Amino acid sequence: MYYNIERLVGIVKEGGIIDYEEYWNRAAVGTGITNGHYSLPTGFGNYGNGGSVGIGGSFGSGTYLCASPSGAFMGTGGCLVSSNENATNMSGPQRYGQYALQYFDANANMDDDGGDEDDDGKITGDEDDEDLGAGPAAFPYGAALRELYLIKKGGVAPERLILRWNVIPDPDAPMGFGCSVSTDGIATGSGCL
Image 1 (cartoon, rainbow, N blue to C red):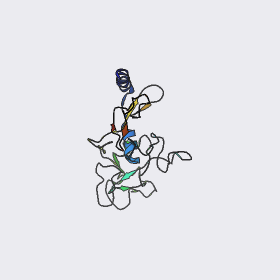
Image 2 (image 1 turned 120 degrees about the vertical axis):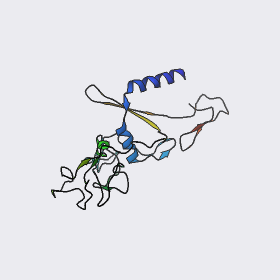
Image 3 (image 1 turned 30 degrees about the vertical axis):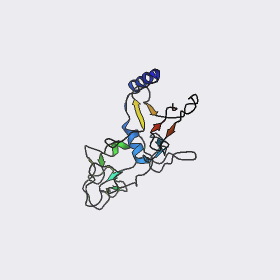
Image 4 (image 1 turned 120 degrees about the horizontal axis):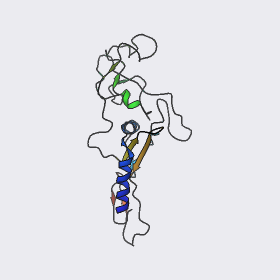
């Protein structure tokens, strides 16, 4: 047990900083729990608008863009807030760089053009684009985080690390020492690893 705790502390110290991008990705995909783990895979920032994670999936065409709806200010909730107009219908896995776009409003003047101020077919690069200076929380305050996402910058490319708690029955536990895991990930019994 001592070794495991020391090893975990070492990994966290060497692992870098909190990977807010992956927490945002997790929020977009969903935080439903099955057997103590998140139910759906995120694709770890490799998938974007139109993408689907898994065998036979596709990476998608790019990122999602946020815009204030007509007559209402987008605020700092980002594209996941259902009352905001999501110019590209945000849902599903997010590419790295997507979280930064939650600070950006492509229809800051809140008119009914949906953000395409110069009528060129794009909602970016117009006079109504605005950096809000503040974005949504990557994860809710006080929420139980089931996984730890870290990013270590430097070298040729950043390294990403995910730590997941996995509780399983101890095969060497004495008879009568049971182990069970609730759907929210709480382990009970002295026969757990």
